[in-house]
Length: 137
Image (cartoon, rainbow, N blue to C red; front, side, top):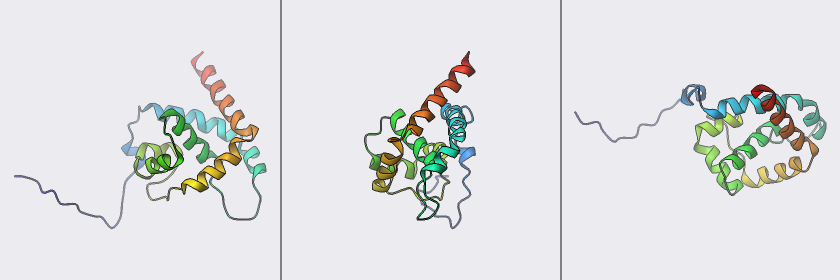
């Protein structure tokens, strides 16, 4: 019997990102390395931001998104936000849930520029590369 080509919308979504991305995908290993280096910089991130005001994009998520932009040669922040909107692998890597809103590209750019001009972003990369080298030796 031929199946129908009807689209059925669901009221609730029960998509588990962990189940959708293969366990052996290389970005899973990379995410562990990146998370370890970002965790070590938590105090530095806290010192960068004010205690009051509107919440910013989490610096850990921002750096993971920038890393994806470099790895996948995504040319603009708008294209990156588009990929984050529909790509489950990207959402898992960055730390966004399936129902989380993706940031506005201009807000992302301003926050990224502020964060990447600090020494913290460079320290994060150095930590990640050092931990990778020590694991492979």
